[in-house]
Image 1 (tube, one colour):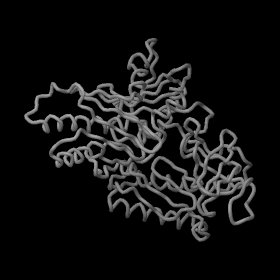
Image 2: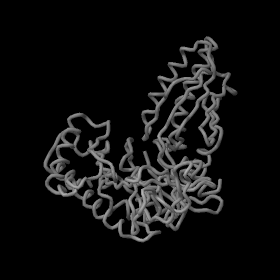
Image 3: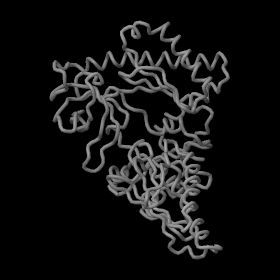
Image 4: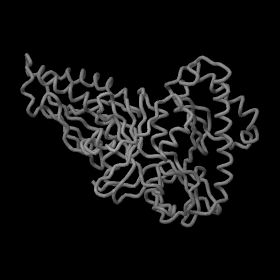
Length: 414
């Protein structure tokens, strides 16, 4: 696979766009980055509470660059900066720390969270949460050892914070298995221990700094999207290609990429033209996707859910023994393509799929079983829930950034 990072210009707007391409140069993922200086998902700011919406237990927080929508939880989850609230409830004018959760779309404000988290390559620390947690993808033995290592480090280095009840929750991400793989040596263990100590040290320094800062300040800028994706991607990336000097320099400095083939592209024939990247971007946001059989699927994104419809269209060239056999083949082909399109378009929330009806209802169960296999390649959690009374298949997908269509609407006005 190839990971391409380049600048794309659509509708006179230029943004850095990332493309994960398979061996046939077909897109697997596409991500449009905000412009330099815009509020990036994951970045942490100090802000001032504005309008409070008591009926929805929420408020708007001004971070200088934008008004961020914040759902309020219990008071203990708020990290105040510079000025402390004197009442039991948050109020207008309070100065708090907020982390960007989702980018703003169209006329919607960006959303934030007061549950501040800091992360490193393999760990996440979460403010005002407790416990040592491990990804469910890690083995029981590895989980047990990581808990033991962490408890020892806390006892030796951060005992005073533990006694005050100020320790954050720590989460070990699934990619830590690539370092340890259940087989320990001193070098790998030392690397993990140093990362734990380093992130805890950064966390306590950050909390102390944040509690004394004025509003409208960027406390921590989230690193660019491609660093996190390259760190956590499941597939093997053979080549990382960019024609942006600053991005190339950043890639070379990342320790976890030292064994990767990083290329700086300097040819006069641009990357955009070489891989038809503008066309790939437009195709990935089009409503209709055509299948090899002649059938097609339509994808409609709404406020409440995403609707995907499978149509037999001009697929009569399929020679099937029975009508169900004919329709089953189309539905299976569609299910495989749908799993790719969901990931490519970064659809999230509720996804409803209307496969072509078949007389034998048990065939839909088999299609759902195949669909569960196809979505396993996704980098975020996807659940094939069930079929409804009308034989519609319901899927849920964890939200991780805005959808590709929303990114293009926001940054390219498509």
